[in-house]
Amino acid sequence: MIKIGLTGSIGMGKSTSAKLFADAGIPVNDADAVVHDLYSGDAVALVEAAFPGTTADGKVDRQELSRKLAGDPSGFKRLEAIVHPLVRERERAFLERHGKAGADMVVLDIPLLFETGAENRLDKIVVVSCDPQIQRQRVLARPGMTEEKFNMILSRQTPDAEKRARADYVIDTSRSIDAAREQVKEIVADLRRKPKADGTESGEP
Image (cartoon, rainbow, N blue to C red; front, top):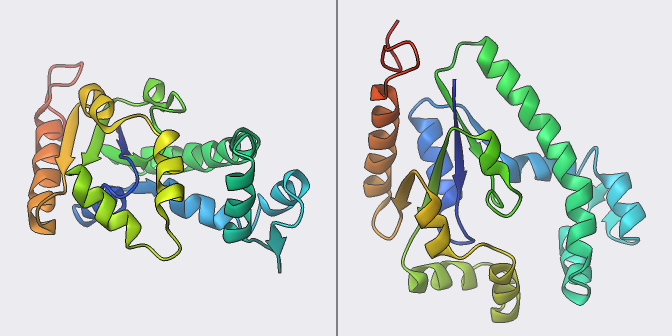
């Protein structure tokens, strides 16, 4: 089973690209969705203990947590120490489930793939990218987003040019969704053409 890591800086179109892989029939483990679930479950008590006052009604208040982190960026390390092991547990269960089901490939949607050294447990890396001006327009159009917050997020992410240089494939989302969909189809087809260790091609019996 080929483990594909999907990543990209904020506003590059990673979530859309993940959906396109899912539309192509490839199982996708969405780290953002996992974190969202953890923030109303397993992570709540741990986050409250580390960042008092950031939970309410059994859920993490993401806005309040974001506000605290903006005031004390050192908190990101504490938060990552809580969240990343829980995300990895879910990821392992996902891989086991689809391995048993016989999937020939899966996508692990990992926002901070390079930043956390996740490339070491992946077979292929797909980076989603677009024109920086388009990225800026997309991000600043989000509710509650400011230039300051955008720049803080970018400062914690590996530069886009470096990500592209380290990728096996790059999806350019500067154009239409249809164009991105074609790129995803080409990546899937290319991976299924790659010879496996036994000399057959992926997808062959």
